Length: 327
Image (cartoon, one colour):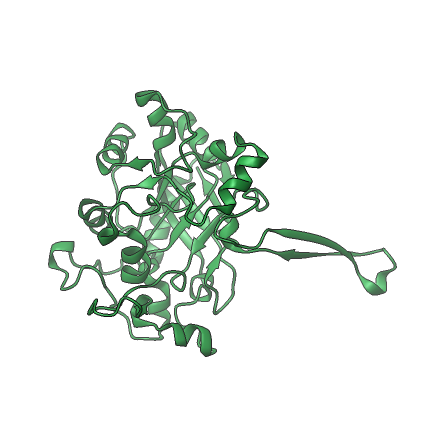
């Protein structure tokens, strides 16, 4: 079993927990180091019962056009030059941030510890932008995650179903600043009989796929052209930060664009600062959780085994998840 970090209240600086040597593989794993062989074996033993499975990857072409000026997905089928049409190749041109993706530890920085220079940022472990952009160092790249993949017990907080059932909300709010409170998350967990365990991979279903599919082409274009688009997600607050830390999640993910409300309603508690730059917790975004929610309902259990294989790119910033849930 991995040694668990101290409680939130005992952290010298809750904004940063960098226990591993700079540049080490352990640093590159971040909180995925909680997924020890014992934790993974226990999850497989207790969660895989029927062999049913569902992939959690949204259509890679779906969010088109993407926001934030990102490149649109392009897929080309090429005739192999020497084959005279007898063989074909693919060419994929895409930004992982356009669809289901893990935000790697290189994706998001946080203000420098002294907070005196707003322009100066650090990534997880104290990594600088110069190390990432100007050297061949693989420090905190997603290649560290690719060595053994991400595997363990997943837990689903199905907010989209709960909100429709209890608040009469249709899932058309995913591209607004709709705020999911911690109290709502805790109510869903209690109703679903979820008992969190260290090393769990937390999934939050917000309802982006339904929101996007209901939009017209004009609405999608208008979304992509916004300088600062709005995204639904979990609230930013010290309560949420404490809850995430003290449950010792190995990773978090949702079907929303940002996992947390964006733009942040309280910048002091912006979760990307804490999870990625501060603690080394992967953030998954735009996963497809609809099929997963259906299986959870069928089995009346909201825990399952998760397997994810990020791209083996040593210096990668993010990666498609290549993720599967097994029951």
